[in-house]
Amino acid sequence: MITLAKNTACPCGRMQGKRSLSFEECCQRYLDHFDSTPAPDAESLMRSRYSAFVLQRASYLLNTWDPSHRPAEVDFDANTKWLGLEVKAHRTINLGHAEVEFVARYRVQGKASRLHELSRFVYQEGRWYYIDGI
Image (cartoon, rainbow, N blue to C red; front, side, top):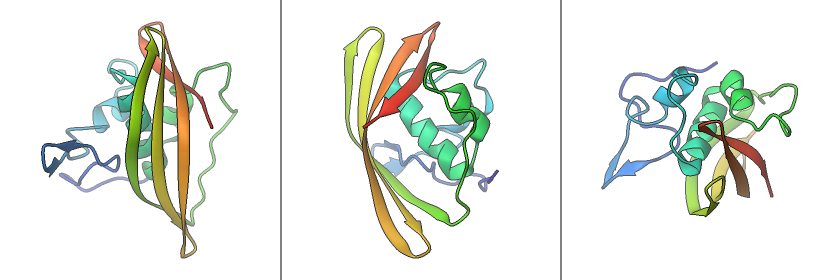
């Protein structure tokens, strides 16, 4: 698990006006207090899941995965360096479903890559869960 220095910009890149939010202001509350502080919407969950990948927080990723699609475990590649996240679109389909389109940039052993995904989310029992992505 990776930790961030105090006041470090949140890995998810969320902005407030022209200012980057710190991890403490943004995703930390969801990662550290999953049981009591669920992400309020699908975009916030997607951003917090990106931060969890950056910080190698497997338990958060598993806890926020829809149980019917959840893998047994999450592995992290020590050679992967996450470089940034851009949310392209967030769409509420109905009260219980939403989609978030994003591009996550990363580098593995010096080679830059992009993950462009349309993620699907479901709202159940008072919280959002990641289903899957294409």
